[in-house]
Image (cartoon, rainbow, N blue to C red; front, side, top):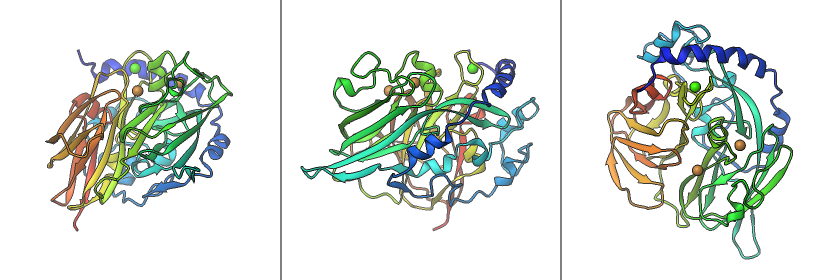
Length: 374
Ligand code: CU
Ligand code: CA
Ligand code: CU
């Protein structure tokens, strides 16, 4: 039976006192700065900034009541409870900027191998870090490079990839990539290098294959918290010949937050921050082809979904084919499932997108596309 908000709240409050203690843990910012330097960052909207996208209702996010012009039922529900003021946390305070993450594809540091192939290299550091994921709610996360979700790694089919992984966290971790590779590069405990202990490093090396929209995540046991604490990210392999050009391309990682222990989530989001895209709608242009790499990493709940209002889209499961399998307005994904959504908005205006699961939507997994007239 689905849990109601009130059933979840008492344990969430008890978690809040624990979060205050954990907030005193240093955030390893020096390590993150080192990890992110020297990269050929491709960022359509400016990684780390609040992005160029307009935020017309920004002020409402800090207003507390969340009683702006838009209908926001979950905010209303949350608003009366201690420790939760409602609305989304401003990205600079949260430590997560879902709008910047949308168009932030990290192509790594590239060089050419003797055989003419491209070598792509990344430095990824696992760090423990606190995030304010909802007003007054601190989540003691485990992250890749200080962000949830981790960087979206982008490669072209056939490239050689080297991921230099350092574990600066307090627990053993791995990086497990979806794709085709040798067993010892699989990031599975007990195989090859297996678990990477705190303070240790390992370089994963494999070819970029097959093309598609993939993901990576920690595979340390117990697996559920190692994923749910934030150790995951998108892994995009572009076909060798490319895809037909899109006018806009973005990544959306669907996740959840278990803030009070147990085996359920108290919050849900796209790109890491509940309700963010209600306050900062995804800016798109009328009639433009928008390609969305949609990835579900949600732990504890068996199925996630994506639904858009007033429109239909073509869906390419796992992104491994160049022709879509479905024309729809709703798709579902289990954990680890992903695919490409291609959509054009014929009408200007604001259109909601959300999980077609009311509980998830009301706990943060909802937002808007804002379509500007062309
Ligand atoms: Cu881990
Ligand atoms: Ca919980
Ligand atoms: Cu997986």
